[in-house]
Image 1 (cartoon, one colour):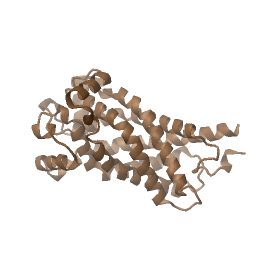
Image 2: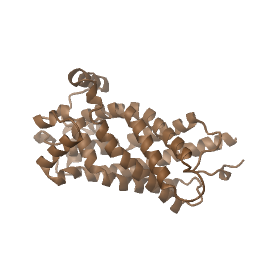
Image 3: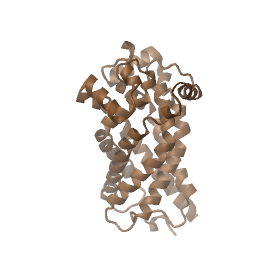
Image 4: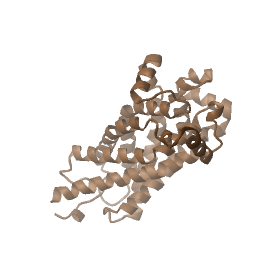
Length: 301
């Protein structure tokens, strides 16, 4: 049977969970590694009340000062934490997405299934974030200006010793409050855009890339305030401000941001967040669809 005879957007009958997870793992590692320097810049810009040498006026200013003071290698500080966690987390992410989408009839017919897309995306996020959150905490602790950690092992041990296991999940409720709507928005936008610009449902790298980038930008812009709150909670152990160091929970963190920086504070780092997310989601979806197409072809040979 030729590849084109499959309903590409759905999984072929013998497409295994292992193959689906492998496609997701490839997508996750490719996505995070490619845009990591931009993610580091976003974290630096979102941190409240940094030391004077860690205070930046914008994206280009942050990049030039970091390169001058810390060298180009500093742009990849903490990437090993992402590489270690992104593969398994994205494997769970896409496996859950496809399973829930199929169960809700999201692969049936040519019409839009926004509820199935949003629900499957939300379920995928809840499952993958539970696995990824500790790795994300370690990543951001190593990204901040003046970080003293030399490895992810040292960072994880120090955080656990000083703040306990809860430090790795202090931001999890906030992360879910951000990533569930982010993923629901992204998956709904991606599915809808894909059906419009690729009605044949064939494997088309350009349309997968375009739909992924636009869907990611849309979702990232709307959820930036929650990302700022998440960054505050995940980096609180490195803060000089006593209020930030003792912040516990979404509402307490939000009140600190509002008091110190007003409503504008909730959009700190929005430009690097959107700029990071567009290639990130484009790479993620392109890698996932490429891997899925490869496995479908492999089954036909």
